[in-house]
Length: 437
Image 1: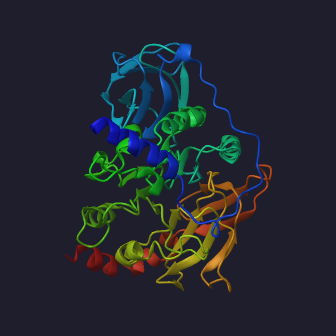
Image 2: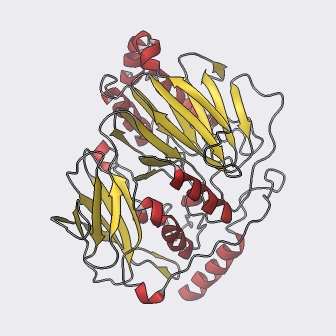
Image 3: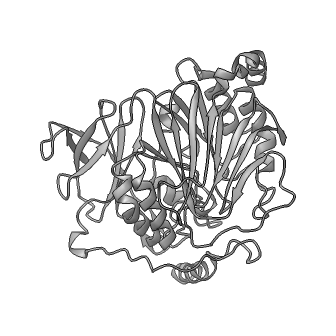
């Protein structure tokens, strides 16, 4: 009987899981060539789906999957091709999901590594050699930003454009594989992004397509948490769904739109503590990512971020957050500096960039007239590049997939709130807001 129930659930999920939006909200893009993901079964015992992430100062976490349950969780690495003078051992996990069983998922921490340096590494003592580059220790630093990736021809175009960008770290504000309960799609996504994700750190947070909960049978985020381990423990968080990290003068906070966020939640308490630890002399730039946008003039997903915004925006404002990135809405939008829905020179710039190339298409309908806080908006697939030049200035650009990489469809110089004096003026507000129980 239990097996029959599982079979029924599997059929039901496969038939219904991808229906998440209405046709009125989204417009299908013109089709591109189908994206094929070749995989040689003879190599299935080799490490696959390799990706890396930052994990504390001078350390990188290497993650991969093997079908062979006895494969060692070891990474050999060095600064010359084929010469590995260091190695590290790590941890493994696996999970089952209805009729699916994952391979052996490996997570290994390597380091300390030199900043702004190239390393060569091999996973599990076999398979191909990979190459990674560590981020710089100081400005300038460049981030590639793209959310809601999925696995379409448009995704492939986005990844190709990002590959042309001379970036140091990829920031992804949720919705990675669009597996939607169909677990092998996590595997195809891992293989799709491996060429980029194995060479530059990918820092991600979860979106609605990562939830994948089944009442009474499966908790949410099992697949996501097993495969994409982020440095939550290093930042004092109790959950992989929200964490922070620092790189080259930037403090970056990844929040969870689908984890509790009200004033009584663990995430809210952690956020207050994390913001209190930020040293703006050491990290003059403060950036936040989460999935559901707070400032959204698109008709799609309108108002879905309001509750989180009501709870957490006062904290971010008190801490003088410079930039906020979100996804979820499959279009691009950039705001002026804003707080409490009003233009505010000491507020954050909010950027919705959920246009990585997912299967659901574009959100092409906007609310008119355009709100005063909204500076630029367009329903096109693409990616963004944030180059933080120094402690006072950063250059943001957004690139459509239909354009060549050198073409900037939207760009702006951004001045940090530290240099504008906002941080100093809000020092008392910060203390009162973040220390009040």
